[in-house]
Amino acid sequence: MPANYDRYINSGAWEERKIAYYAKYERKCTGCGATEDVDLHHHTYERLGAELDTDLVPVCESCHATIHRFHEEQGGSLSAATFDALRFLTDKQESRTRAQSQGFVPRNQRGAKRDNSGRVISTTDWREEAMRNVRFR
Image 1 (tube, one colour):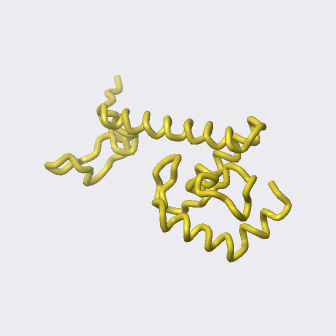
Image 2 (image 1 turned 90 degrees about the vertical axis):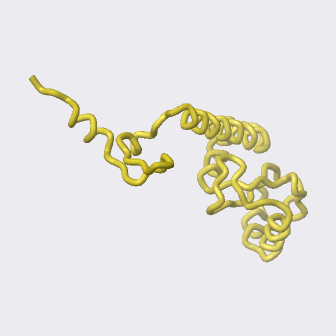
Image 3 (image 1 turned 90 degrees about the horizontal axis):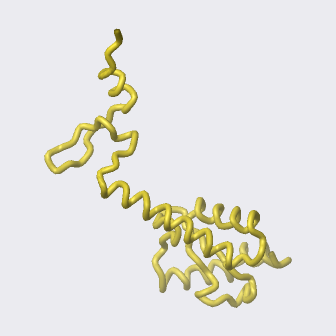
């Protein structure tokens, strides 16, 4: 990280840069799609203070931490770690969505009561539901 990074990230110039970025692009995490607590991550510091839009990636706090964890573990360039982490995160999100669309029911919704349209209206702990069906000899 460049020596002037902290000073720049806490400056009015960075605030203006973020406003300009979000005026053009949606404030949505590239990794998981979250819209809360989204940061702008620099995948390169080459043009710090004069960064291009393509130098920045919107990510939520959790995905941002994952990117930096990938970078610490892999070493090498921050750009490579950023895009490896984003690929991992989007694959994980897609597999979760695919499982839900194929009838997978998350543990906290097993035994849930549903309305006529299929929306969950109340849940029962799945363990509690399973224990009711166990017969002891």
